[in-house]
Length: 292
Image 1: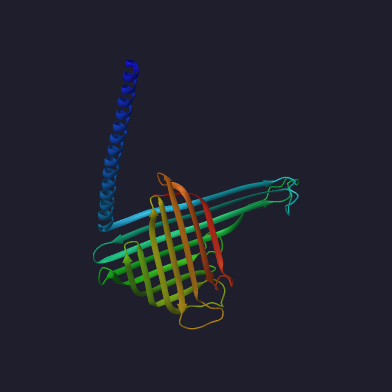
Image 2: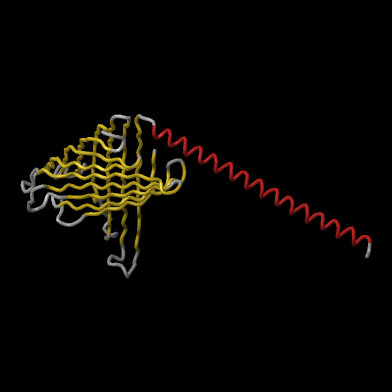
């Protein structure tokens, strides 16, 4: 065989061997770095758990802002071929929780507002005005003295009304005592069998009632950057009435953090309260979210 050909073949074999060895070394280095990163993440998670377990105040805020804008010009298939519409929806929630070995105090508040504008006559040179479509104010304060690490005797004040329109007409105030169960760090279950339910407003049909107040609050990070918060409250009166004073509200919020607390948020709620409406109520907001 030609000497030059043998030299060329030897060179190629050596090159392939070097490349294979380099690839194996890089893969081994990559595996080492991944293992080190996994260890660091576990250590950080453990440190965060220790920080959360320390007594003291935990405060924060989070909210969602949604905005839509649409325009139709000679769109024959529409009910209004020429129309411009826009809507704004916003929700803001805040909490301040204190916890130590003997007692806890959990405070939260939230507002939800929405406005909508629809202009179906674009030739009259008169701009339509925004109309309010959502107005919610909710405040709660729960104080508990611990019987053991998971069970506490507790007192709750819960207030629900509108803020910008029909303030306290109606407004609903609950004050009661009972027990609170905290099976998980981020889950609170309240059962208050002695609760006074006060209906504020001009309608004499609704009065005050004694009953049981249920309250469940849960918060969890489903995956990195995606947080779910769920809240369920209800009141069951001991005496029957027409219309009924029984009510329940269930709200859920999802926040996906994209960059430094800014992300995408979804919030929706269901409510049934005959003191406000004989039919079930619901709302939802999708938009930009921000959390501190």
